[in-house]
Image (cartoon, rainbow, N blue to C red; front, top):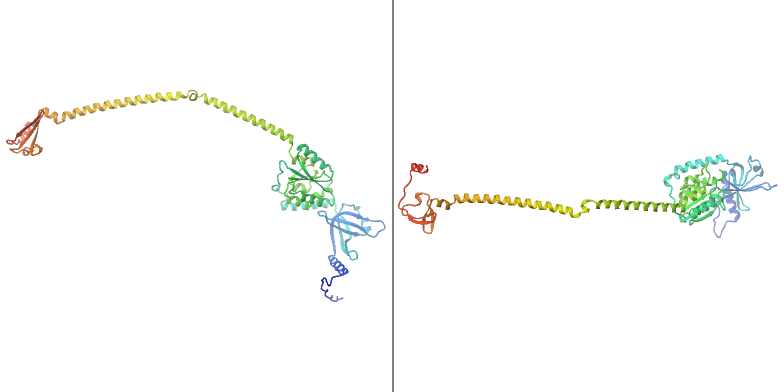
Length: 424
C-alpha cells in the first residue's frame, strides 16, 4: 500500500501560527518514533487505587533530580514476585506516550524487573574498575587536611547521630571550631542530588568538608557509591573526608575522598587537633627546650672553665716571658757570634796589613833599596833598564828617608854570568 505524498507544511510566522492541535500532533508523532525502550530508575511514588484500570508511578533518576511518570496495568504490579515499594530500584520496558488532550508525557510499561542487590554490587564493581582506570583513586591525588581548619563543612542527615557525634567530639577537642552544616537526605532517590548541591555550596567556602552517615545496610549506602557523587568529590577544590561508618563494605566515596574515617567520631578526631593534647605537647616541648638550653649552657660553661684553666690563659704573661728569654738568648748568641766574627776579621786584616807593609815600597826602601827615576821635564819615569837612563840623564833617587838628585855618568850592562852570581 503506497502512501500518498503529504503536502508541504505552510510557513510558520506570527501571521500564520500553528494551532495547538498541530503542535500536539507533531510532538506525538516524534515521540511515537522512539519506540519501546528499557529505562532504569528508582520508584519514588506508587498510586494504585482499588477499582482503577491504571496504576501511576513516578520513576526518579538516582543521580540527578529528574523524574518520569509511568503508567501500567495494576495486574502487572500484583504479579511481581516481590512487592514493589517506594525506593526500589527497577528496570522497566515500555513506550512513551504523549497525551494530546492534556499535553503530558508518560511511559506506558509492560514489564517491570526489580534490580537485586547482587546486580547493584556488580555495577558498583564495574564502576570501581572504571574510576580506578581513570586514576580517581590514586593516592598521589589525595590532598592533605589543614592542621587547624577555620571552618568545617558537614554534609549529613538532619538531627542524625552522625551529626551529633561529629559536632560534640570536634567541639570537645577544639572548642573554637566552626561548622557549616548542610542537612541532606543520606538515602533514597533524593540523596545524591541533595549531596551534590551541598557539596557545590561548601566547596571553596570552608577548609575541609565531611560527608557523614552512621552506617546502614548495603541498599541504604548505595548513594555513596554513585558515579556523579564520586566524580564531584574528586573534582572538589576542598579536601573531603568520608565518614560513612560501614566497615564490612566500603562505598566508593571512601576510595575517592581525600581521607577515609572509620566512623563520624573518627572523622571529628581527624579534622581538628585535640587542644589538651596540643597544650601538653607544647608544655613538653618547652620543658625539653629548656632542658636542652640548660644542658648547652652547662657544656659551654665547662668548656670555658677548661679553657681558662689552661696555662696559657691562667698566666698570659708566662708565654711572653718565655719568649723574652728566648729572644735574649738569641740576642746574646748573635752578639757573641758577631764579636767573634769581628775579632777574626780584625786579626785577619792586621795580618794582611802587616803582609802588605812588609812587601810595600816603604819597607823595601827601609831595607836599603832605592827607586831610580829619570827626570824629563815635569814627568818622572822609573828606570828599569840601563837603556832608560843613558849617560847624562838627570836622575832622582828615592831612598828610605828622602830623595837624591844625580846624573848618569855612564852605564854598564851585566853579563848573564854576573847576573847569576849576583842572584846567588
